[in-house]
Length: 223
Image (cartoon, rainbow, N blue to C red):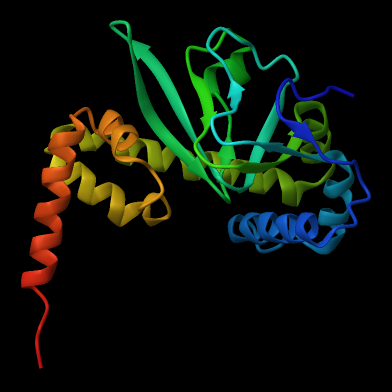
């Protein structure tokens, strides 16, 4: 069995503590959104294949140049992770992943290539880990789980495609789109990190936030 390269691994299955049980409940509730036919029978087969790994704030899940040699998928149970890349010698934030979402460096995972991204926890983060060998075996054995994998791939592809259109919007419009479409990131991502993602300075971001706040205040109806 492969071991995670990073993070603190919790005791293996059977999981007995209430917190871990609640993480799995939340995960499968999320998976069932993509396939309501995923039943308790399939869930009982999936759970023993999983590990629980925790990361502290600022811990790395994956560093530049590393390969996902242990070939695993992280499902975020709680917390927040950012993906970073380097352009012109400067590190930039390119996306965020929070509870209920899959966390991987896509090129490194699928191509087994050295990662051009760094994955770093912005909060204390707990992940449920499923290794690729187990993932492959489960999708071959359980058609309902294969459907979940396919629907997740489609879901993230659609999200990524929608975000490619944001390049045509102003920074203020991109900020508004981010808050509207991904409210779970609101007030959890620091100004400096969010500004890096938007490609603007923290000072510019503060002006955008003040402007948005003033618009909300003027739109309030007083009785």
